Length: 77
Ligand code: HEM
Image (tube, rainbow, N blue to C red):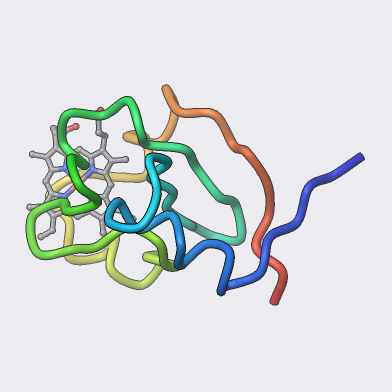
């Protein structure tokens, strides 16, 4: 069964309120808790716990960076 999460549930995984750190990209939610580049939910000027699809355009890398992370669910729009 596919797991869906609301924006409010995603927002709680911003690296501040809970141990888990999640980021949404193109409707998929990735668990980046293990990343040393997302400590406390902060990644350069970006914060976890939200949909960062648009922001990836400003990044010096492609969506390839998500390949080593698990999709833990989908964002309920
Ligand atoms: C100013 C914007 C950004 C900068 C300067 C930045 C910089 C970096 C750098 C230097 C790395 C590691 C090297 C690499 O894989 O190329 C990285 C990895 C990563 N970035 Fe970004 N990034 C930015 C925006 C974003 C955004 C908007 C997202 C999400 C949509 C994102 C998601 C990731 C992920 C998931 C990784 C992999 C982390 C890991 O492997 O532990 N980045 N970023």
